[in-house]
Length: 468
Image 1: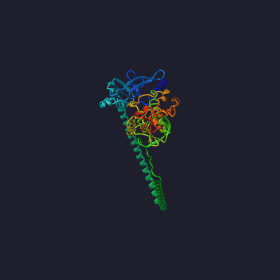
Image 2: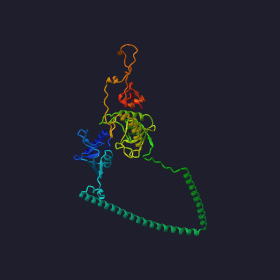
Image 3: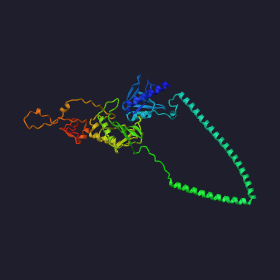
Image 4: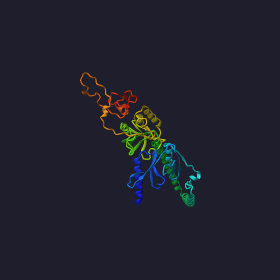
């Protein structure tokens, strides 16, 4: 018992450490590689590679293998009852769960050509899939035993039901016969008494008449009460909510995690919400650097979700991902947070998994507009890759050259005194990381004499930065 608990504890610890290190992985599943069968490695599936992990002797996370994907690679998958075997190029591995979903992921997201091994109808039956003779014989014996047991069970049940019915029928017939005989004797006795006493006959008739009147009045009263009850109490039925509608649910903000994730109170429970269909640069990934515009996206997201009534809207697909995070469209005062981040160039369209694609066209249009304007993440042509953001934020170093490099206007001289005694008129500087931040203070941009002017923001070299 103690050993079993330790194994469960090790498995849970490995799962927790891997999920913490790779919160945006597409799949985290048990994987077996050649030579590591039975090691219970966890595989992390990303768009670029399969990474496998286990725990070292100290209980820390240790990478055991890395299989790098190549676009256009061909391969095949063989789905069994309890696992799926993959052969991709020179790589072979076995997945315990979600084999079909992983095959679709490799085909659609990683641009590979994965084919499924086809089988004849009898090879799809459990026990006949592997083609091994001993497994087939064992399966046939088990199936025959199960069939025989089921037939015996139904045969015994039918016999018992028939015997029970026959016994019940006999009892009912005997009971009915005895009751009939008793009733006949009572009727004969009463008839004899009535015939012998005319006065009793008159009394009996009078009593029967009174009882019939009372019975009639009671039935009429009962019918009236039933009618009154039906007219007062209407039949009601509860309406049920269907998933996938555009109905929004109001929630309370708990915390802003980063540019595309928040924590809220939903149905009386704290839940993590991952924004559908978008991705923002990283700020808190344990194995990645802080990326350009990651902090800006996080700050802007925090500003938006704190500015009004916060609501969630779910799509027709799954409401949660495999990490237990809610997948939703987020609104503040009926305005889409996702679309705002895309319009301001602080997010890109990503993680598109049908059927959760209700607003994909709108989001792609907002992304295209920001890209055409070259704002924020679109300022550098090679920063936004097809699958990831490229680059890290460099640490800012103190330098007096910042103030000296800013162009200044020459002061007008009114006397013949030396110029060294007159300080530059533009000794003060203002620093903005990009045009998005600058326009929050100066919506129309700034010219080259302004303290906030930077040459890198003057894309058309007209001595005016960040103009619209």
